[in-house]
Image (cartoon, rainbow, N blue to C red; front, top):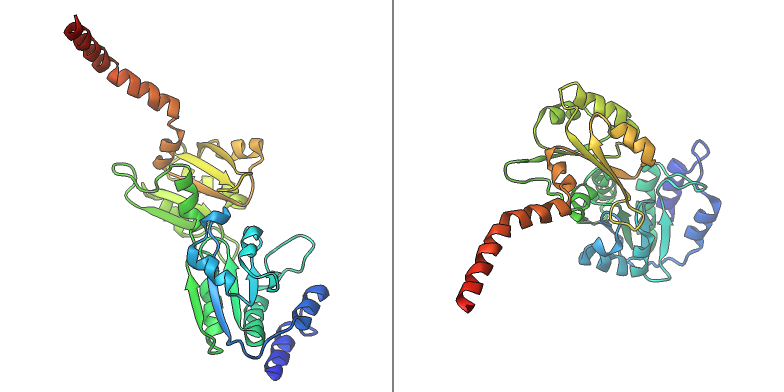
Length: 304
């Protein structure tokens, strides 16, 4: 096991690479490992942010973990499911901390599994929806370490639902797209143009920095007036929302200072969100006012 660790350290944390924060590495290698724990890895989806939206199976895996590697967007209250003696390391982007590359994370998962046993890789949303989960699964599996995938509730599905916006609805949207705001080259996905030409709901993740370009794509196919809603920090107490159309959403976002992390939802389905509850109540009252009036008259007639 020692020789494997040295090889992994040399390939990832060697002289030609940026070394992780010394304090973290000291914690890892001074932490009491166990030769009796069988190496295994669980890729766990943490859900959209609200800690109550993790699955029961995901919470159970955390309770059985020897090590937890978690992303920045994971709600840290979920770490309470793990034992207090468990090694917990944030491997996401965080100001003032070492930024782990995906290659470093892959090696770290294997190294810690061989040293401690059960490693839970806790990822925001669902590990297989823009979470690079399969990259980690493939790398770990190459070392003959068993990997279990525990799905999570993706923000693409959960956040609209929490605001009572169905991604599909008869007569409005028969399907939906879930698209990344940027591809691996830092550019807009080519699929965005196909989505813009369709009449379906379009959910864009990690797209706030590309919002002006996104609106240009929809405008180019005559969709300037299609409704849009952007939800920042969805499911959390500091959630913020702005709605508008393709034509004005960039301006409204700047005015309200909405930024990442946020989901962008585009399509006619957004009108269900904009349909104010007061209007629904008024519409209901108007529709049934005459019915109630006639009914009351009949009751009074019977009494007299």
